[in-house]
Image 1 (cartoon, rainbow, N blue to C red):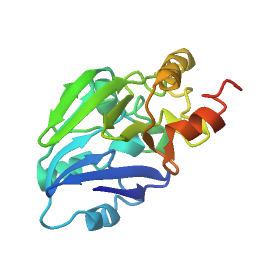
Image 2: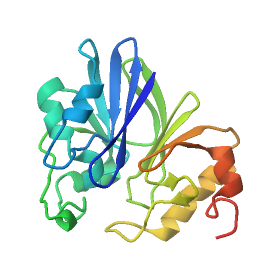
Image 3: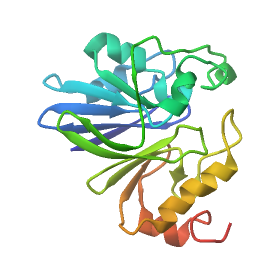
Length: 207
């Protein structure tokens, strides 16, 4: 079962993937004033939080990591190319929001390829451009794409570590992907890859 909630002033999507009461949380963040009530309200009392998976290291996707770790002690995963974002407020863009946030909790770095967390089996693909270590995680017909692709648009590449050239390579991967999947972006509504191939100017050749 997939649950989602929109958090923080930047309206970041946080996803909770549940199977047999075991849960993985993707990109958890704080609401204004370090408020976690909306996020905690989504977590059922009988759930076991196995892991937090970060699609990339920006502040609006990681700001609730430490608080959740204190409550549930989940494993925390981020791609190794974004590891420095967890400890660098300039890279994770918290400095731009008048914060100076770093993740203090222990975490594990991941690479491309199969990733098994409890009962969940993902295929991790490096889809950089928004950040060097931005990843897409595929499971069943779902793709957690972070800030790579949005409905009718893509993530920005002008923040520290961003690269339009790298983004183009990531978009080419999606253009060539043969199967259709539901895209779960970091901001905005979910969409289908087939729709984006037709309507998204960054995927249909208009850009």
